[in-house]
Length: 494
Image 1 (cartoon, one colour):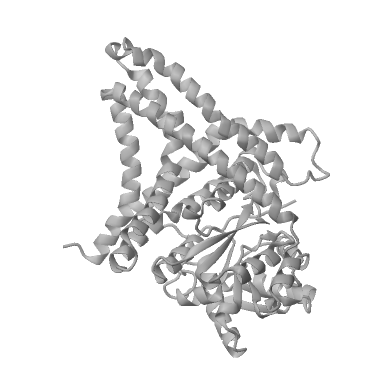
Image 2 (cartoon, helix red, strand yellow):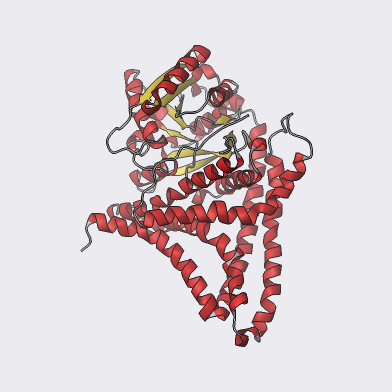
């Protein structure tokens, strides 16, 4: 009989074990059963070509919805269709660590530029006690620059060394939510009427964001049972960033576009909005994990026995890439950011553990949710390595008997055709990247547009070094119980 500790540790081992077994078995079979592996690689490549077509379809579908959404006058629709719209209160939670004034200022200015009245937006800005001097300086500057421009400026300090916490964004937000609960209670507010937006400090919202969010919140039959996920674009400092960082930033934005169109697989990621009632019902954002942005969805989904969803917002929010002062530091930041995102693998043991206790959610819902989470991490770690490296291995090491088979002679040509078809995804990505590329800054030469297209030749390298490897790193740490702390993504602009 396993103890609770050992059972949970087993659950933590399983995701990494399936990933490493896939890689080890594939390499082993390439040597001892190369013909089997050639069959497998051909079938897998066909499957992946179909996935690329599937991905491209939903990408264009989301793109059309995005273009339509940003052209609409959502505030006019809100005030016309919902006369009592003002009873909903937009509250923005902004955790702050060590970011510079230029980042904070651009974020707050984007709120002021909204079509939704800034005078009806409540700002909750929470600094870190471990960076007290910087926080006090920023707090004073924010108060001086933005007094009277919002419904209220609310400042909290997240104390250092609180018990049962991992220092980071999640614990900061959790503390701010608990403090804000007192603020709301003192004013007699209904939690269901509070629309809470949890943003990174570098989040620049589209002018239509809060109007669109408020419109969908008022229109939703049960808004307290839904999170609202915007399209996340990492393009604030895109022109200043190295090519590989740009590719990975575009890749994340494309993944978000794709996910917004597939409601069966949509969970919260990074900046998102939701009912404050749901936040309170599930105990607030987790304070002892790294992936609090997506965990909050699972907390609510479990709390409401599977009766919880994510509503897509096709209005974008723009954020910074992890650009730093030097090329090398930027790539290091990128690796650490990808590893932190891949640490979302911690949701798999969490779900396995919670599923044992919750008997009210159907097994089909449990299986589907777990499969999407598990398959996503497996693909993240394995696919690029299988296609670009291991896929050629059996052709290199096959013996004479295998080399004389018709399959061996035809396999390179078949693989070449499949890879050419798969390149369609790369072509689509290059086109889409130019469509969502922000306006060229005056200090960037015109020929930089050419590099924006040519940079996609780096995709095979970037997928292995800054996607598969960070994911392998994360799942391996989890396998061996080497838990990662929260590394703060560096955000610097020129």
